[in-house]
Length: 358
Image 1 (cartoon, rainbow, N blue to C red):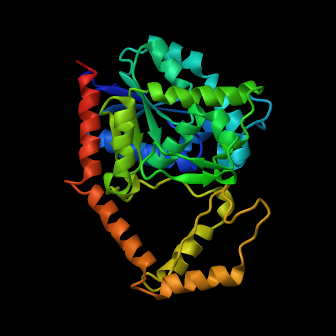
Image 2: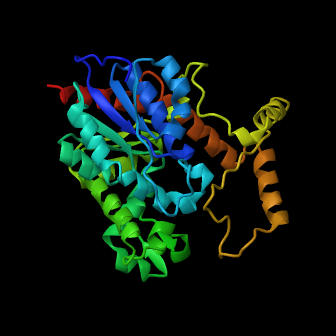
Image 3: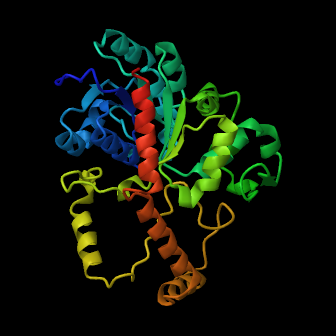
């Protein structure tokens, strides 16, 4: 490691999960923490190190801990990121990363100024045991919504009842949502207690409840009821909505991720096309890699009906969908303003981190 970490700053170990949908938001958080004078070490495997280059250029004092990814029989040699495997590689990747437990302990014990806390992705539930081993708090970071975590956490606590019900009712959650069985999280639907690797996933998910704090890439105006619910359930106040992190002002040199080498200029083509479109004339739809867009495993949406709904939504500027989108957009921008809820929650998180040095 090239730089010396100031002893008067809290030193935090940041451990992203190697998938862009997870790591980008956590690196955005790292940027905000570094701006607030938190000393950071970011743990990555060798092939994921280049993704840190933009952040390290802006914040040269950020350290890196580069550890080789332990091999796993279900991960092809040289694969170190989920974008190379798709979601089918998650279980193998999580289990492979868990083998870094001992190397991290060795690094911690040999460090002149070891971290006072670890911030790790919610997929890395095993880091709760790591944090207990080295006697520092673990802060769990979620790139997704508070509601999504609340649903999954309920499922792990009531696994048999959830998997045996055609419709699952979440009466204890805000607004008492309910979901059909086929719409439940796949990690719950396909859980196999006889598979030790899947059991490790469950154990890690349950361990999140023991985290010292939870940080969500969400904001009070969007999910305040779920954040309050979690604070009551967890029995402490260290539940923070700090998003949308990508809306905080970022320097131009801080590119969020790097285009895949296989894109061959597609990014420039898409941006050029967007620049030629009229304002508010483009609808962006992201289904992700594991989301069905209609009911039934083999279902296909009716293209004519789908087109009709989209056309009506886009052309009716005063329609309820457009109005709602603008309301949420304005609230998201307000959340990351100087006096916004997410900015205040970030400052509160930093205050709590500083108290760990006392």
